[in-house]
Length: 323
Image: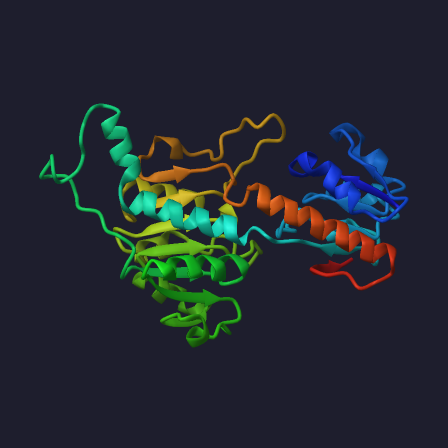
């Protein structure tokens, strides 16, 4: 069996991944220019990206395994019939930690205070009567747009701080009482959630239906002090509408970990055509909320286990679709 690995996040774990593969497996870690050539006789592609050209080259592919939860950059229509597309998770703890940390950072005004103290200004009500009081998490209402692995784990963390939780999901089938939530609903209840929340956590998958889900009209429904945290995909929130809402203080602040533009190579690119970096009420991070060692050690183990199942003709886990 030949496995082609195209994901830089797994390079530090190369030894661990290869040790978990079936005996006799050939693992190839090609340069970008060589990917399509290596796919010609490959059985498995390990990558979060599979273009139409890659799919056409990999005529013998049996499995395309994403290195994360997202499969929106895998062109399943270009894959050979019967090719399985699978994903993996294990990012819940790291992302929950990020969401809570970002929320506290923004609601407590720590970004503003840090910038002020670097100018020798003590920007608190103790020293400046005009400085605003900040608020802690107990009693805050956290609204979850999506309540899968990420939303549910993040709610556990917020709940420990004494916050209240509400959620809307596509199917509207979350048992609110079982999860200790105030209420749950479907996407039809999104407007109500946005109006009621002090913190809005966005973690739904990106689909044609969810692109632009939170637009200018919906941002205007949010509280003027509300914090928006997007750890799903950038286009879930309308780019121009979000920038305008932050600039005009329609909402209080935002933590944005998922963006509208990404670098092709070299790690250098503006994340948006708009100057989010000029705003003082946004925390900008480079899609790093789930990037911890724990996340990828567990993902590498998942991927190797699925490849072993493939070699043994056993059912695969975390199957997203079959071409």
